[in-house]
Each structure stands twice: as structure tokens, then as C-alpha cells.
Image 1 (cartoon, rainbow, N blue to C red):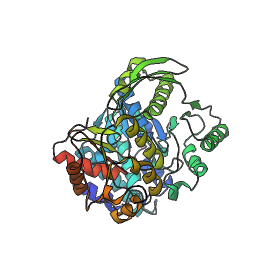
Image 2: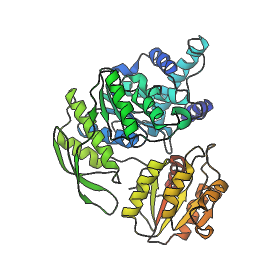
Image 3: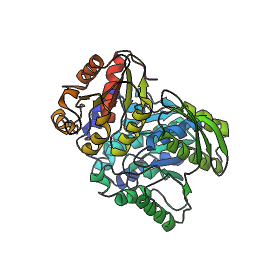
Image 4: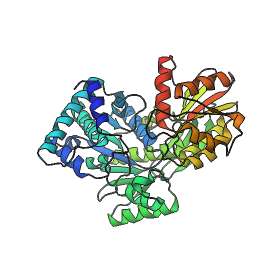
Length: 439
């Protein structure tokens, strides 16, 4: 298959979330048939509700600064599926992606035809296998794997990572993971297995109790990602300079490349993971930690695009993410703000709206090109609970929403686009054709 044929094939497997099967057998059988590529390198697996992607990016940046050959697997992508697989900081090429995808497809179909599998592996299962093949072929020493959904039955769990982390938990994806935070914590905590090093971010009490119980069950002493953190300064663009002190060492005046105070928590988890890797023989000096955190960038997460007006992109898609964005707006955005909002219909829209919509001088509603997207009509009705109708604009497309926002926002203002990474990705693709460059 060439790249376009690869995308057509993967999409034919069904929507990534709606066709996701939480179970390991398909992936286990597929990976074994591919020669167990995950056994060629060490792995770190990161699960959680918020911050898992940012933490993975930070850790990858630290490891590259330490000259460790590193693979990074994240999801979802914004524009191209190749964004999900990075080797030593470089996105895998379309040719390489298609090559590995062809092998995974042929193997999957052979397993189905021989009845070793009842059905073809799903979109996410096959893309995970593609990533592991790419990492083996590139000869990486370390793979950093962000879970797609959950943990206990997520395809990335098959890699058997010896180092794992759980970032802050909150309610999200309840239709798959459970209706309560306790049920969600059970799914995430299952990545903690006997013999692993487990780094745990600060958690709500009920989630922490579940995680600690799991640690006791498998005889793991958790590494709690707490440390003394002192904010030395903040910059106008929302970045922070912090001094962090763990039980091993002190990292003075670290400038975080990623914006928002919530990134301090993610940075601490990344540091504790780096220290854990150091105990396993990976050479990660203090300078690599400092340099790596400064260089880390995660597209679509508090991304600033300079211009008149400024554009701020953030994929906040649950209440916790929305609150982090609202805190950022309150602290760092002092100019007129236009909020461009589009979201998936299966999210906690009323709670997200209550947090974000009052921060907008003007709200422009959009519907991303996604079958799960909430309609503009439904969003408009929701928005009237928080804003007068003269401050709400309904648009027919994401492009029209951005055109309206740019037309109606003062040149010294900010356009904040949020609600879904699908919305962010669609916007970035459009802005890219207009020669915008995110900072």
C-alpha cells in the first residue's frame, strides 16, 4: 500500500473511538506474529486523563537531550497520522508508515483468515503495531507510549513497559471506562504490574485510594510525583520558570517550554520518570532534564500563533482541561477574547461551557468534520445559558468560524480556539495553507 491507500484502509476499520475494543488478545496475537518488536527496546507507558500526552512529550524531549535514541507514540493526531510516531524527535515518513502498515495489514488478514483471530485488529491496535515495528527498525533504545484509552486493556499495555506513570485522573470516556472516578481509576491503575516502577501524579482522594490498593496487590512501592516546586517567574506568553526539588536532586530555574501552570505537575512526573530511568542505567544528567523541559512542545496544547489578533489553540475536551484553560486565560490573557468552540457530542458539554463560555467577549460556535461532533444548534442553545445572544455567533464550518472570529476580534485581541483536538487539527490544517506558523 502507498500512504493514501494506507489511510483509506485504516479508516475502513471504523472510527478510532467507536470501534475500539478494550481487550489485549488481538494485539497480543498480532504482535507475536510480527516477531514481538517490543522486546527490542525498553518502554515507558503513561496513562491518565489529563496531561499524559504532555508528560510523554516532556519525557521524550528530556531523553533526546540526553542523547538516548527514543521513540514516541501518542494519540490522537491533529493533521496527519504520522504525527503519532516520532523517532528521535522526527515524525515518521509517509513511506515508512505505509511500509509498516502494509506488513501489519497482511499479518492481520492472515491471522483472521487462519482463524487465529475472529476479527481484524482495530484501527488503534494496528497503528500501535505500526509504531512498535517502526521503533524496532529504527533501533530505538527507549519507547515512550501514551495509552489511547484506559490502561488495563489498552493496546499499548502489550508492550509490557517496566516503567509506568499515571497522570491526574478525572471523569472522561465514561461510556468505555466506567461512570465513576473509582471505576476509571481501576482501569488506569491496572498498568501497574509486579516488578514495574510506577510514578503517580497527585490524584483525587478516591482515585489515589484505588491506585495505592493496586500497588499493594502487586507489591509495588509507588514513586509519588511530589516535589517542592517554586515558581521563580512567569512570562507574558504563559510559560513559567520554576525550581523543582525531588528527593534525589534540585533543578533550579527550569523554564518550561509548555504553557500553563498545570504543566508544572506534568513536568514533575516527567522528571520522576527520568530519574527512574536513570536508576535503570539510562544516563540522564541534570542538564538534559533542564534542556529537555525547555524544548518540549506539544501541538494544540496552549499553542500560540502570533499575529493580529493572536490565536491560541487548546484542545481542552473535558472539565478539568477546560478549567486549566480558563485559569490560563484569567492569568495571561488581558485583552478582548473571542472563543471559537466546537466539541464532540459525547463530552460533558454543559460543564465545559459553564467553565469557558463566561470568559468570552464573543463566542463563535463551530462543528468539526467528525461524526461525533455536537451540532451548532445544540451548542447555541447551551451557550444561551451563559451569554446573551448578541455575543454568540453560529457558523456553518470551522473555516467560516475562524473567518468570523478574525473579522470580529480587535487586532490587539486573542482568538482562543478550543473544545476538541479535532477542531484544533482542522483549524491548523487550514491555517497551514495560509502560512501561519505556531510558536
